[in-house]
Length: 498
Image (cartoon, rainbow, N blue to C red):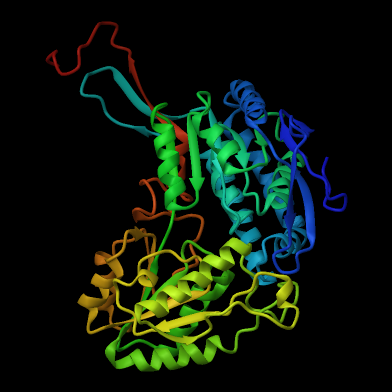
């Protein structure tokens, strides 16, 4: 089994830790310091095929394990997440770059999701309904489907795998898991915990490697009927196209360009708290990040000045330091993309209030740090107000009233999260009704979803499926309708008179 200390890691296929068939490897580094985290197998199609075969074989046994017994394993997994929370938190700070508090929250979400889905092992409710015929009983049941290809991102490297893998397993499916190449050690540790909890061999497999090889093979493999992917819009479209010829069940969680609306009657200090947390937490690397602030005219200047004051006080650095509030972005490509949007914003005529530069000095040169950035006087049609930057950048937009604010908030291709700060209950309920997003917060930022409600968005944020809550079960199961006729004669529904 792999260990962080040895800095050598393997795939987990059919209950065995194995190298990639090719023997090729890649490295994972700390984005704050450049320190080597580990060396991982750079897998090929052959490795994916082996993992799928193992998961397919295990499915025939796993689907017959009673759901409450499957759930017992998840309960044990949840307890191990609790026991290892500090260890996982520390590893996440080192490999992904989150500050310690946020990394701990990521692990806590996996704890919550695992326990929640374990509880579904004694539920997995179907329905019963009266028949239109006498002496006839009918019901619907949830049935497992088969092998799930779970393709996860680096920004929530413990939480998001739990969103996909816990419901899949309790429903009776098996999984081939491809973690992001930026956070493979966290993916590996995630799977090790399931192994320690007694999950049977082949039920959960991990294959490391790039999306163009491992991910694409999973999507195109004829024996993988379900694909759940969290990633960019572009990758999501390609995944949907590749899965279409196999009529796969494809679940896509994609981008966001989320807005916080601040109305004239809002508690501005509270709103600024929500903006800072939502826009700059995780260095803005969340699909739910508040990359737009839509402020009503009477509070526009106040929001602007208070936000800049707060942002300029934020401390950048290694997340292992408890004084640090903003960690690095994930890699150099991300850093360069974020910086390119600063130039785009200035070229478009937006006013740069603070930030907008790659951070240096005080040891920051060793990592990928970007100064938290605020633009003002942003037109809703500007690229910085339309395109997902995925970094610590937010754009302040002026609105005259609630109608214009909601129109601006909806005027994007995404529809994940939304927020409004107001003391007016009527405005709050207008926002709930009219904001075209999968999530709406009242007097809170755009982040903070809980595991027992559906998570996902509208428009090009996804394809209609949802993570979390009971809604997740709809993706990982098929409905079967059952009719039991105990009349002793043939009864033809819709034809025979009762």
